[in-house]
Image (cartoon, rainbow, N blue to C red):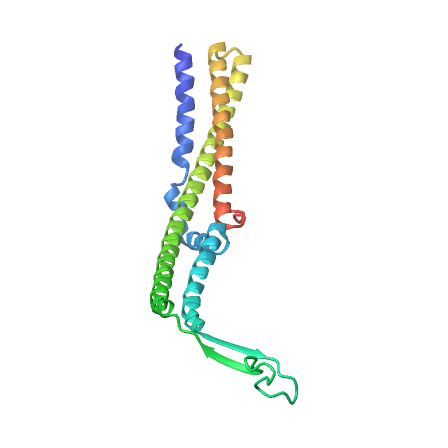
Length: 226
């Protein structure tokens, strides 16, 4: 039992050594990378493109509301064959040539300023929503970036731990074969090695998920070495 405690303590010391040797995640944060990823997200993220298109559509509503003042005017042209008079002698109600008219609907006319004002207000809201979206997008990019660095760092630690555990297990196997350690100690080292390998595999999966999430929001693959 004492031997098992000793080997377990040794393995924990190895894992602790790997963790302490790992560089802090704070030292890995690169402000230039964050700014680049935020710029890429604003350029490539599909939801951001949708937000931009929606804002443009609302902006166009302002122009349409202003142009709607022309609804009170109308113009028409009636074909007049050569040498025909403007007034048709057969049908005096039939007028040939170009006509211009003004139809005023007082209720509609009075609504125009309010329609323009409403369109401008909607556009202002759309601008504020776009600003808020970009703020939230920046925070989301940072969140995914920090998570990516965290999982990358954890994977490095657990990979080293798995390697150390394997080294210890191999060393104890050779000692066990020479009857220098008990079967219990040897088996404990194998269990510890198996646990370290399992943690490593889980860390690999978490790292890939974090990488995919960051790449999804920036719209491209993360360059090698970052």
